[in-house]
Image (cartoon, rainbow, N blue to C red; front, top):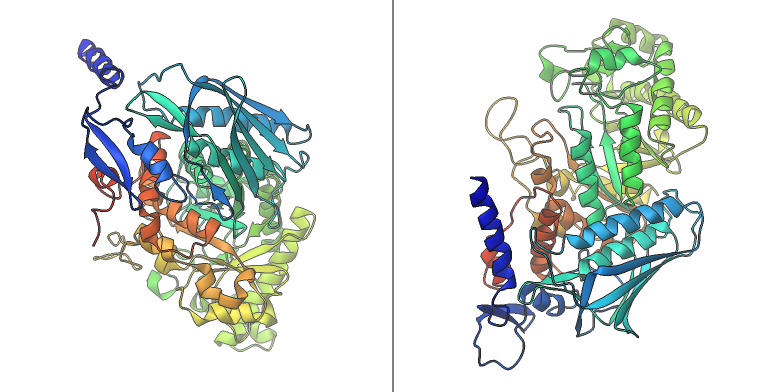
Length: 592
């Protein structure tokens, strides 16, 4: 068996290297699509490989997401020698280590342009890449950071190609390098590595918040699978990994100040996230321009781990459908003063583990009045405060909790930070201004994209993040896990609908208040084994929508996303397939 494997490997490599002058197929650009043609030795023009054709057959070539500013890819491809590519760093400061990290990662990324087991010709021009970081001391994420860049490629003397990337900071330079990696392609006809010779790109994102949420509480996800997700995010310029790290089913976050929460709440001692593990993810993300945003969801969505505290109500209450949206139920008891000591300790541990994130997510969805109303202790508290036991009074109780919890966040962080909350009964238009200061809170919308609450919140001045479930809930379209049939938000959401989900069309004249959007993967039916396929390449469709907010439809993007999917596969991402490979090689035939 071992001899057979070696023989077939040799044959695969030999096939690419042999008969290079007589390829069977060639491609030709015809009206914006690459047409596959049987090669005729009588043709006088050199045969064009598929990727070479795709690079120049539309305005944006193989780039994903497409740039938002001036883009000129030229008309010529230069052969380059991958062994003689040098990356030069300019201006020294606090971001030196990050700049070195992206240099090393980029060198590895470039090699993925060449198929495995293939050794390209060691011929072609040398290439010098110059990275110009105009603010080398900036290393922190913020909602107003400049992620834009300018990329120029031009021929130089002495058989060289020069590429220059200018960014206002590390994050812009990193994005420019990502684009540069997409311009390096492999010519499988001649076994050469190629790059467009004359390129100018000016590019920056439309929205500052471009995210993916992963819920690691319903099912546990390995650190390696999380890092793989962040790697794929970086490849398409998504910049926020939203870590929904705890819920009622488990408490895998290791709180040093409250260790019993993890001891009782984790699925096993091996299925936890320590400060060191989280720090590894945060560092990995920073080097790829991806912030790691923690969420501690409360006052609902708590349960396991809190058993010995006496600080919850209706935990594992039955019948569960009476008290919550999925088992097990559980909510914090807001009238217990000790609760706020616990919360401050959890927030402080998160601030430490996540290395002072620039924002904090407090959850705040699906709070059940029935759950709180099942507690006689809470009923007495409300009556003592001259509240009745109707919905408006439970909103007052929720506000009582939220106000005290917000104070503990600021104390734990040592400063005010932007706080994110999900849409909920607390954010309803009739009373949201009474409870949530628009300068303190960012609202993440999970209802439908047609929900009138979106416009109402914008009119009141709130900043929004769009995660409308009808386009951005990637757990939809699978079998039910409670009961029979399909899950609650079916059907499955294809990449086309993700791509068409425009925050600008939802917000119109208030679009400057929309910070961006986020795809969510709630993990009742996903874990490390299924993660890649659930997210990719659909999250890439979101990436272009949020980076470029294109005026064109998914049809214009279809040929480019097929190539982006190929790039993800080459990087080791186990993405879903969108179409037969025949469609990738025969553009314009797979349509409805």
